[in-house]
Amino acid sequence: METLITILVGVLVTVAVYLLLSRNLVRVILGTAILSHAVHLLLMTMGGLKKGSVPIIGEEAGNYTDALPQALILTAIVISFAVTAFLLVLAYRTYKETGSDDLSVLRGTEDE
Amino acid sequence: MNNMIVLPMIIPILTGVFLIFLRPYVKIQRVLSILSILVTIGVSIYILNRIQTDGILRLDFGGWLPPYGILFVADSFAMLLVVTTAIITGILLFYAFSSVSKSFESMFFYPFVFFLIAGVNGSFLTGDLFNLFVCFEVMLLSSYVLITLGGRKVQLVESIKYVSINVLSSWFFLVAIAYLYGTVGTLNMAHLSVRVAEVGQGPLLTVISIIFLIVFSLKAGLLLYFWLPGSYSAPPTVIAALFGALLTKVGIYAMFRVFTLIFYHEPGITHTLIGVMAAVTLIGGSIGAIAHNDVRQIVSYNVVIAVGFILVGLAISTEVAIQGSIYYLIHDMIIKALLFLIAGTMIYLTGTARIEQMSGLIRNYPILGWLFFITMLSLAGIPPLSGFIGKVYIGQGAIEAGSFVLLAIAFISSIFVLYSLLRIFMNCFWGETIINEDDDVPLKKGILIPCVVLGILTIALGLGAEGIAVYVSDAAHTLMNPEIYIEAVLQD
Image (tube, rainbow over all chains, first blue to last red; front, side):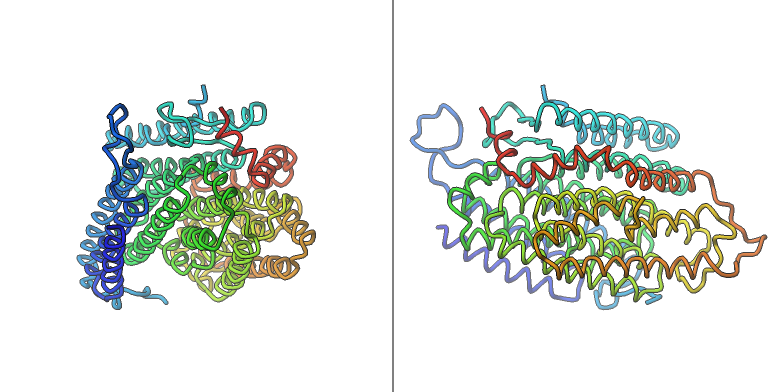
């Protein structure tokens, strides 16, 4: 199971890098979103996939799943949502202001 | 009873939240923000003094003892930076009152400054790697907002680069955390240190440590500083000063923490790498600083040089060198704020950022001119000013450890700093004035006084280095002896 998820993470990172390298701003943002999904899966896998019961004290199970990776992912997901939302708004504003979402047009400033 | 050490983070957050509701009442926002920053300064200084008597303080949130819960740890190093952060923010707020336009003030400028401070202080105080990530994000998200506030074209274009680079580095941070957790099974920094010492820092852990190095280098602008000059020259003066003074310092702090507390077993690989990166940063920053004719660009490249210089101390990693780095870190926070303020004021007065289009400013604005002169000397490390003592200690450490190449590069870079700023001084302040009396923009007191206060601070830090010597040597001692930190966190 761990191997499968790791391969999935690899595929996601590949897709994300492909998107990140494109010139279109929206594609870059989608790339960062996929990149963060990949890392969340990686966090989950590195903590070990489900091996025991739910992590509630007092249950009569022999061993419990590690709750920490889940807590970490929850926080990381919230943060990545916020950042992606911000980036999308930023891209929209930049498009409105400059009339372009092509990164090769946006590079550099006028007085350079 | 150590609940106090959460205050440097909680006070700014609460203030920020409260100020959001006071959006239309600019006067009340100003008064409240000053009050809140004063309280933060007071509390931080009190905690710093308590550490000297009671040792390292820690706070376990929710009573979960380490290594299970998350926690805040306050040692001298962290608290020195918290105190400096609070003082500089206070001064910059005064500058903001008279330089920032009304539309900014009613567009949540103050709340986001406070969220930024909360993130910065949280990063300094946390004792847990994941918490460090969260505090980084709090800080970064507010910096994204501050850099785009106003929405000029340059700001938007530059902030896209800034945001994307930081998203990518946050991704690397999470990858490093995932691998580290998978390898040693903990994220508490003291516990990590123990575990890493137990299993020995093998190749795998060294690779993980290098991922951390990449992450913090991106945040601090060590070697990977390509995004820095552009994004630091885009926002308005106060915000640029806030960034230049605080943001890169958090990356530097994290690097010091991680490479003195957790990954200190393979200095041959990691610390050599830091040394090489610092050297390249110093060279690249020097070239950038003398290559540009734009005041903001020159000033931004000076940030890069300072980052390289501070990390020379970490690369050498003796107690004296670390002491030097800490002195220089505090000095740099003050002086970079001042430098950005003066550069911004010059642009405000002349309406241009090109140094060849300014001349003779010192005739119209003598105090500003002499202040710039002091800044220049202080950055170059001329004795009575604050840059001197840090340079001496780093130099002494380098000689003791025999890293003469680093020493040479670090000190030659000081000459480039001096030269790049001397160019500004000669071009902009000396010569015939080109501003005739009708166009003479009056320099507001509210703009000049914060600069003067920062100038006094740099002189005071230079003359009164004795005053903070106790704290700095304690901080360096704790950094070089990780068992003190571990014992304070994992006892009972």
